Structures are given as structure tokens and as C-alpha cells.
Image (cartoon, rainbow, N blue to C red; front, side, top):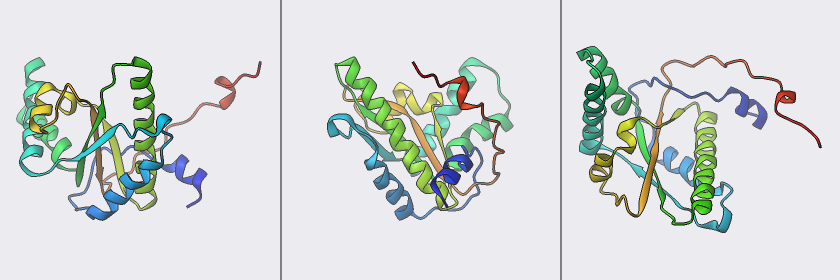
Length: 183
């Protein structure tokens, strides 16, 4: 697939088939993401491939957090659990903390670039992804579940990866002239 076509056709996938994606494909996508623009070459991110009991705990936390703010049906609770459990892979995204706000800002930018690269790599192989910032993915208890120090790292969500169940339609995009000026 040509690069521009890949960029224009990639979509955020919300629903996944119950199929396992090869672990090596996921590792290759994350390996490709290491080529993201990275000021100072610090590689400030950590990818945590969440599996088994930890993933179950995050699914439970997702339901618990939603129930704390509103009454939800068992059907809605199951759907919330599936958001965590259904994708083949659920990769927690963590950034190393930095006392300098400018560097933290740059680090978030490089994380965003790395996620885009991984997503494009996966899309080219017919796989979907979604960067989720759902409450459970960044909650203080998530640090405990993931055995991650909140003093050392900041959770920035999760990258869900899987075989798309439904291909989202492309939304209309505005013309560049709305955002581009020459001075």
C-alpha cells in the first residue's frame, strides 16, 4: 500500500474479532515505533503487554469506575469488560516522568508519534488499533495492577490491537486551507 493511501485509510477500530494476533507482529509494530521523532533520543515510553489476570483486573476496574458515576446494566458492564478483554493485545502506554514540563511535553509528542507508527504498521497488515484513554487505563489502581511506579511513570492510556470486526467509515476531512497560512 502506498504511504498516502495508508494514511488516508487507517481508522481507529473499536470492535475486534476474537482472534489472536501473532505476538511477533505486535512486537514488530512496537519495534517500528522506535523510529518516531524523539528529541534527545531518550525513548521515554514503556509498552506493557497486559495479559491474563492483570487484564481481568483492569476490565473489572473499568466496570467499577463506571458504576461509581452512574447506574449501568449488566449488558453495559459486559460491554465495558469487552473493551479491555476483546482486543488481542492491550498495551499499556507509560511515559517516564520528568520534572521539566517542556521535556514532558516533548515526551508526550514522541509517544503520540510512536503510537501512530505502530498503528500504521498494523493497519498495513490488516490489523486494527485504538489508543484508548479510558479511566481504567490511567487510574491509580492501574499502577498497582501493572506493578508500575507512579512516581517514575505516568500512564497515558492503552493501545488496543486486534483483527477488526467492523471497519469504521472515513469521516469527511476539511480542506488544508482552513489550517494553513503563509506569512
